[in-house]
Amino acid sequence: MHAAAPAIEFRDVVAGYGEFMILNNLSLAARRGAITLLIGPNGAGKSTVLKTLFGLLKPRQGRVLLDGADVTGAAPKDLLAHGIAFVPQGRNLFPQLTVWQNLELGGITLGRRLTHARIPAVLELFPRVRERLHAQASALSGGEQKQLEIGRALLLQPKVLLIDEPSIGLSPLVVADVFRLLRRLAGEGTTVLMVEQNVKSALKVSDDAIALESGRLVLHKPAGELLADPHIERLFLGSAAAV
Amino acid sequence: MTDLLQLTFSGIATGSIYALAALGFTLLWQASGTINFAQGEFVMLPAFAMLFFAAQGAPLPVAFVLTIAVAVAVLGWAFKRGVVDPLFRHGMMAIVVATIGLSIAMRNGVRIYSADAHPFPSLFADKLLRVGGVTVSLADAGTLAFALVLVVATQAFLARTLTGRAMQAVAQNTESAAVLGINVPLMILYTFAINAVLACAAALLVTPVYFGKFDMGESLGTKAFFAAVIGGFNNSRGALLGGVIVGIGENLAAAYISPAYKDAVALALFMVVILFKPQGLLGRKEERKV
Image 1 (spheres, chains in turn yellow, blue):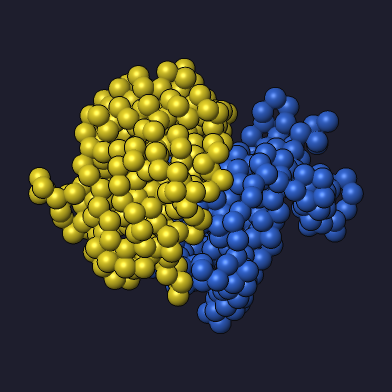
Image 2: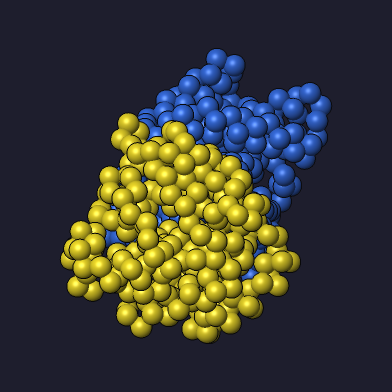
């Protein structure tokens, strides 16, 4: 690990699906221990950045670096070992398995002993989930499910947490809880890279904001500055600014 | 009343064999979204492998173990790598057509080897047992016990071991499983291997009754498919229930209506379930991305 290197770095990355490229020579960097928010209109490539970073999508060109180490094209399993965890958009639990079993599978790369040792600390963060440890995951509310997904990722004690649209389908109270947790994780040194449509709320808890358009970086500045800039708000937040 | 109990018991024993093959259907569907219409031939081929090993002088248990090794390699690994993997990106229909073709090829391939019906040794002595006034054959009781042990063991493996849960996870949400670092291709391969083992066990139990013949899997595969649909294609316990329902239904129809209608029972039950509860008796409604 290079102390001076950004936690996450993209250098001229080109990535996409089939013949259709979403990221076009994208270069960006995210600071260690900070929450970096990716914003931009639909199709800008925000989720594609996360998928490419996590190895679910192989870049056609360019390099992806994690703590200065080249991880371009690495498989998700290897990236997990690098200390990177991903909470994708939508429902990501195993609905017919219990809460405990979902958590246990979250630590499958750690081994059973270490996983079991870490589960109590994760459950401390989510008391509602702890109360329903033996319930089927599908029986949990939307908010509890998202908490369980995040808890499952935290079992790995990741250095970098990628989280895509954590507020979708959640009540404002639960969203506030999730954002508070992300702030706490960043405070403890975890690098968080987040995609979130609920831009105003997300900017309030973020340190930096990166705006993308057509798979290219168009802006990178402190989140507070962006939040205070009405021109930028109109350009990139659109109707989300009303949230 | 005694007749009814005897027929029911015998039906449960036969149904437990259908359940083994049906369990394979549900496992493959859940883990890989594959419907294997060569499932009946997956039972027929191990029967001939066991006959082959037995002809070389191997005792039945040794022939069974050797057959499992071959079946895991051929019906598990080679089937997945050679048929399912290349066609998976082309969707379900390509796999369905390929496995129908595979079943025809396997059947006729074995037919070239031998078109005769080969007697097959039974695991169980030819004895009758009297249980509470009901006479049952040791073969029926043994078949039922053996099949139940296998089904329960498979269920226990899936439910109680981390590997089993990882296999379930892959079945329930493949993308999430990959995100957690679960080795998705390996879990799917395990599923195919378990299916091959279950097919060997079904062959061991069914061949003494039907004899080893190139077309023995045709009817078994169809009934196992109906059993899986009746019980619920996405529920392993449903395979057991569906198998038992088909087995009992067949026996009762043969005794009380006409043996000619025996094979129609599974089809009739299948149609009723498809019409009124298409997810099966124990299955759950699900949506799949296409």
